[in-house]
Image 1 (cartoon, rainbow, N blue to C red):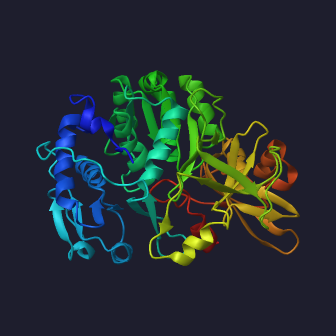
Image 2: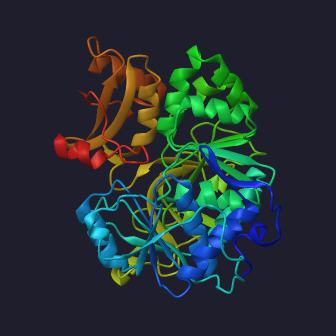
Image 3: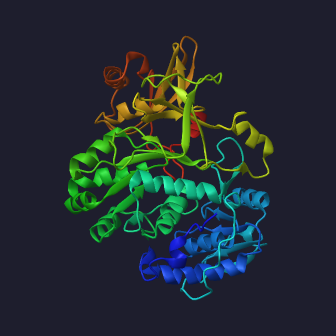
Amino acid sequence: MSSLFPALADGPGERVALRFGERSLTYARLGAAAGAVAARVRDAGRVAVWATPELETAVAVTGALLAGTAAVPLNPKSGESELTHILTDSAPTLVLAAPGAELPPPLGGLTRVDVDASGAGAAVPEDLASGEDPALVVYTSGTTGPPKGAVIPRRALAATLDALADAWQWTGDDVLVHGLPLFHVHGLVLGVLGPLRRGGSVRHLGRFTTEGVTRELTGGATMMFGVPTMYHRVAEALPGDPELAKALGLARLLVSGSAALPVHDHERITAATGQRVIERYGMTETLMNTSVRADGERRAGTVGVPLPGVELRLVEEDGTVLPAPDGESVGEIQVRGANLFTEYLNRPDATAAAFTDDGWFRTGDMAVREPDGYVRIVGRKATDLIKSGGYKIGAGEIENALLEHPGVREAAVTGEPDPDLGERVVAWIVPTNPQSPPTHEELADHVARRLAPHKRPRVVRHLNVLPRNDMGKIMKRALVADA
């Protein structure tokens, strides 16, 4: 296939490609630094990357991809048992890291290569890899056992990034700002490889702050990527920060992903800035499946329409494909296209179980589809689909309704066994004022007025904080386990 990063070889050499804090690399210097990494790892098999939010991580992954070598991004916050599992499973031959980075004991047996991000090094090598060659092995969160390594081929990177360029009108003139971690698809593939494929620029905040967002958007950034916890912090800060509101109003595109952004936060941001955040939907195994388009209706609470090249359908539990979209029927999302991963590394049974006989990937996400094709996620099949009184209820829409109540700061909804209903709706609430939390009756009435009586919570439990993972997703299995 053609090069993943044509701008490195024949693009705007003096344009800044990457900026992390005060450190930056032009395309010419990135090409030299990544070319040196490529020369070092070309025959190394899989290589691990200690994925700190630094310039060296971006150089390391780019260099591995230029060499046609699969990179295994490692979360620096992983515990030793998880790291040991990932290293045993993926069997990298060496680890790429920033000079001075302290590596934990599980990495002690690997050859260490310090990445030189100064911009000195070799020429950009000719890209001889094929589209099916592995590009990344990204480990899933492992909610149902040890993390599985999703093998992502080069054609999936190209397909997703080119489809997003179409949907978002993303060009080399765009400057992206974000503060996402670099061991997940969101921050690494979309947030670093995306700008590099377009010949544009990325400014990484290192650590997300609203002050950093204000500075970069005021200073010429055109796009921002974030997760819902980041946009929630933005929404909370806006009333007292007119400079932040002004900066957000300058952006061409504000994109949220990795979990659903509550409608309440959508509306608060729009009211203060005039901007509508758009959402997209993807997974480690599929990269990106759908998005609200830049030239389409920016409809809060939806993840837009299928991206170019992505087939999407909703199916019943027995595999029956749902008929024409009606905006009400809930089904599991299945997708097919060039954006899909190849396999779970060393897990042929899990790989086979993830696909239907005709090649559709079972996402495990539940959704409804509007008559005009917009997709609205209602939750995960395993934790967010509640079967109560003969109804299929998605937790997501109840969470959005609860968040519209002024007494609710955070909300999560799960189901638990009920002898009469099968399952009852349980609301987990972080109250705005812990000394005076909203009552069960108040919240039940609030939800019933906005949705339907059968969707009201039958139980309300109060918490000081909701358990979340690194990407801001609520860990509902932890809630249910503690019930």
